[in-house]
Amino acid sequence: MGVRFACHACGRRLNVKSELAGRRGICPACSVRFRIPAHDTQTSTPIDASEAPRPDDSSVPAKSTAQQQRAHDSSIAANAGGSANPNPSPQRTSPPSASSTRPPSSLEDVLGGTSATWYVRPSSGGQFGPADGPTLGQWISEGRVADSAMIWRDGWPEWRTARSVLPQEQGGDPPRVEQNHKSIPAVRTVPAAPANTVPAAADPVADPDKPLRTSGKVLDTNKKKVSHKRVTSSVVLALVFILLLSALIFVVWWS
Ligand SMILES: [Zn+2]
Image 1 (cartoon, rainbow, N blue to C red):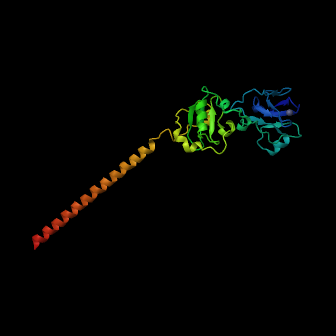
Image 2 (image 1 turned 135 degrees about the vertical axis):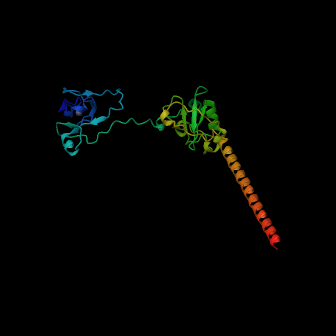
Image 3 (image 1 turned 120 degrees about the vertical axis):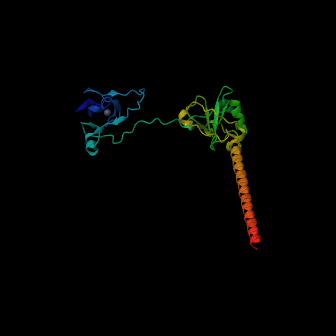
């Protein structure tokens, strides 16, 4: 049993297993996407480009009869032979690459004044911000923001490299933010968006007294070890002394 319909784009007759009705399919002839109709229909329903893909709604590549013979578990079979799309892959929306946005000419334009909220992530780790435009400008002028550092501004869908955002105006290689990042105030707040690119990273600067505490503990432990050793050695010494004394008394007694 199957659902019989024709591709709405190329008219190819297709025969699809009825349990796949309502799912999305790809025409083996023209690779167009369609909604597999529930019953036999004249043509398939085109998938609107604006239709948001549902998570449980994976595209089912329609396969020709010849392919079905090869692929044992093929779920969709077209009832006509001919050319087929052997490997229709789901459309992938490639993320906008950082280089696709042309940086505005002036640094002030990029920074966006005091209303802007910036975050900086050096490649060495940690995160700095929020900083307004002038503050970020100061960091940049002090050479704290390396080209390789990732920066994010409120409203951006993703982090971008400083190289792709900031106009290259200073000559030479500025000192890297990793080297000076202790002087930049540490942040505990993480911008809400983009959530997928902002894992809660442990900020090495956020807890500056942690190493001190650790070394203090180590010192304490060492002290305890030393005093323990002292106690042990004095006890041993006392025992030896008592032993020698009793031996002496013994000798004197028997002589
Ligand atoms: Zn088609």
